[in-house]
Length: 470
Image 1: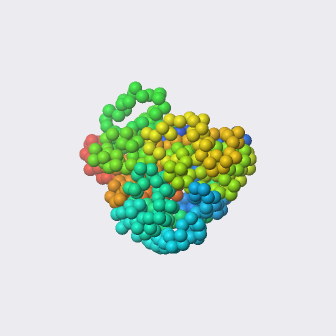
Image 2: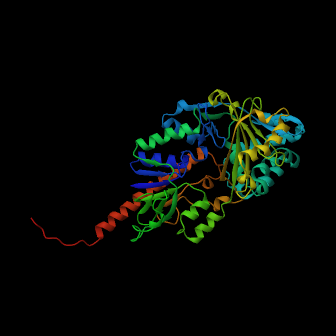
Image 3: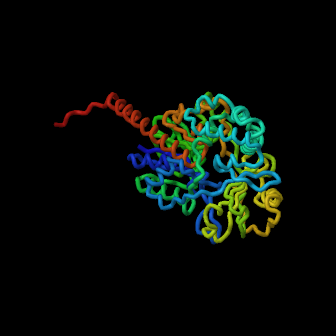
């Protein structure tokens, strides 16, 4: 069976990999010129490796992506280290914030508050069932469990920095998932996540799959008897058109039929691509709110954060929520000796941050960098890149599980797999792999039933009588 996969991020590539090795023929359509999705990379002159547009790492507990890495023979790419994660404290040096012991040693809270924080974290790490936790908000649960003082000093600024005005709405199951599974030891891939994506793409192609870059999909509709001539005015635009129902039709420069389609897009894009989805389902998609991400990547001629890899900053203190010095995790030698610093922010897609140029973003960020390091000079900057993505962080409110749509949409043959559905886990490459492989299994099961129905229909269709020549 032929399956169209919309999107060559890790969800789409993982799904195509399984579909191809199970004997089906996936065709992956990717709008950009690179595979990898949010984990795709870029390279400046003189760099040996690509760097991610949006900072990335894996945790040693991320079984899905680590298992897939071994499965495709890419373990030689994996680098595992324990970099330093810290929290910015006004008028104090950054404090390590990467394990329970570091929290207990936090010097700016009374011992009783620190012990209470440690007890709450231990309780969360020992808990296995998250269902009851999603009934309440993280703000309410943490304030009660840790006390207003500790919550206000540690967690509330981080939640507000990430979710802004929505931080009091985020449910506790989302917070639990971050505490219960994350590890201080982190992994990265030699050559960047782009190198892992390219290894995976090689396996997709060698198993009979196809990946088409710069091939944006324009529409998903049911096929009908007039589909051969439909959309003629769009010929030559380079856009693809997917039509579903009975069989599925994809048109790039020529029309092609598919038996199923997997979309790995944002909910709003799925609504636009598939206008034939029932209005009730479209309403469910509209309720899946999310924030965008804006990341300024700087190449510096020297280190900025000394040994710290990840520096969390409190909400409202700086024009970014996190500083990530990537070359405090892996050597700057892979980037021509330059030191890579990311300044990351989550924001509403309507924010002015999405309209800024790299120079404007640097002008906004530079004064804050001087507050953290007074000797910072913009002459240190050897390159600046501004990356933006309107769909980057789902907002998960209480009882979110009831809002998550299944992977199979009401349009027969159309499936959807996105970061909005990995709940209660947070978005990330490992959970993208998980949901992509899960979608592949559901598609295969659906195709098996669909194929049998076609066989039955063929067997029961009256055929024209022909004489027996024998």
